Amino acid sequence: MRAPTSAPDQSLHPSLSQLVAQFLQERERDLAQASRRTYRIALEQFAKTCPVPLAQIQPVHVQTFLNGLKGRPFQSRSGQWIHPPASPATYNLKRLALQQFFEWAHGRGYFQTPLPTQAIRAARLPTRLPRDLDRLLLQRVLERAQSHSLRYAALIRLMLECGLRAQELLDLTIQDFQMSPEGSLLEVRCGKGSKPRAVAVGAPLAELLQNYLNLERGLYAPTDPLFVSQSRCSAYQGKPLTYDGLRHIVLKLTEPEPGQQTPHQFRHSFATLLLDRGVAPEHIQHLLGHTTAAMTMRYTQRANLRAAIARSREVLDQGLV
Image (cartoon, rainbow, N blue to C red):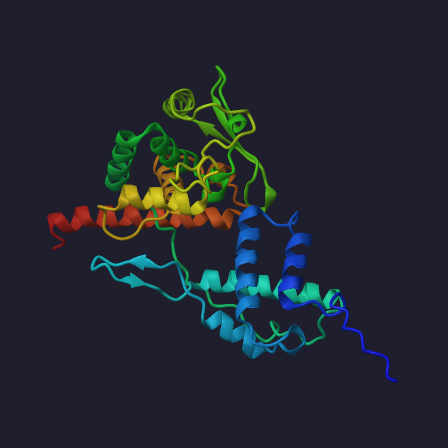
């Protein structure tokens, strides 16, 4: 009589979803929180939609996935929801996540070369100057935030007056805000690339933050998040504020304005406003946490362009001939 065959050992041939989970677990300490979120979303999307097992994945499967990526949906003024294609930057981020996953899988012996991401080129990024916010628009947004709550005002002014990235703002804890007679500071411990830095906090913003903590924040410990969600959903209420929550606040405060503003534009405005006030680019580089001077020089180009437009308009208004 033939002996019954045993079921195949799943540990020797884990599924794509299982490998994705293992990869994310092993890379958790190496990636910043925002990168972990991007990698997790990209890889879980790919594992869910890929029609073949890991060993059969070809470049066409990866390319099809990347070509089908969508950007963040938004609602038009007519009420219709628009699903734009993903930006080149999003395309490249998700391509990088897949590339690192397949390199990891190859190193663990789960995948043979050539890797399916090797033949796929990165999208060409358009050369664009940073898009900051108009000063009059900023004034209107600040007025709306101040009239709404101390929390809204503190969120907006921290992005504008400290040049924080969205994730840096969300990662702040109570103890990162330090007041002293010599001047207040903000410790940015979770900067991009795990590079901490300190930024100055002006006296009006320091007073606003102190009032927010005393009057609106409620009970807290030094290591608690500076900003927590006030969502009506019990799953989020009292938890650290998320990017979607921050973006909702920015959209709410800029709803009457033309176009669609993002949290990152307040960081761009911080840099260009400092340049307009004569702050040296090398100082702005440190405050923004840029690794190279070339990244900061984009703001110099923006400031020069704005000055050239303003000066030419003066001449044109008087008549060129």
